[in-house]
Length: 342
Image 1 (cartoon, rainbow, N blue to C red):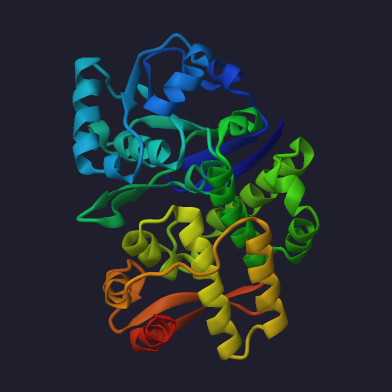
Image 2: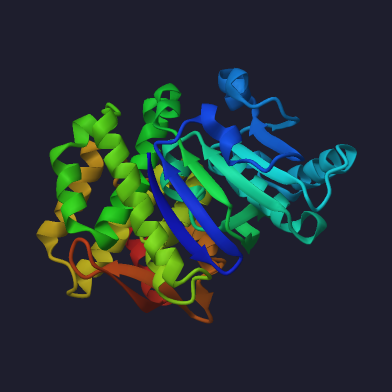
């Protein structure tokens, strides 16, 4: 097991890469803990949970709503949870997002931690202190910045993931390499087949390095005032694609990274050969480089992006592989890109 730390404004967060679900109880307060999980994880791993109250939610983006949050508040009130209580989310990104949001707002805030059961959650959703739910069909429109006390990344839990779920996690791993670590990008190029096969040594290295990159960025810019925006590489178009084309997050971000790389080439920041390397790597990892989507719906989703400021938007580009930059781009320029691809 390897440990990383985030020094957040809401308190420190300890990231435990290689820790096991079976050891969860070692990291919990002595009493008053409630587990939140989903139906899939409960069916697979309930026998490994500590003997604690469990509240189960459904799966998929359709449950990531204020209605689900309301139901969880009711369950906590019924369980007589108070300010000394602690929540643990055991699941993927949706469970982590909802658990963190509920913990951050119930009784004005109680402690919480995560056991991440998907590759996407281990390298993205569970790390960094962003918690939230969707509203009105728009992703993460209501949320908080609040750090989990701990995040357990158990590699053994990845064995039950489908190939598509593994691929979605790989999309975020590629993102971290593309924005911050050219050596990690080269490693992915060389070991893509081993990564997809969840080779123990390879996958633990990739999870650790992704978490290391994200933890470092978050410690320097917890509330996304500057550098943390780099973690949104591929996400501006990615979130719009995810909403309009109804594809999984990692696949949408993959296509979004290709668009962002093309914009980087157009602006003279990235070579065409490096943009091609990015596309080639995504294809080797069985991720899409394009996703058909309605141009008008994409544009509407972009205009509602949280990073928009007036008629411009903070957009992450590549100044070479392993080096991201943030530039303000006019919505009109992005509109031209959308209409060209439509």
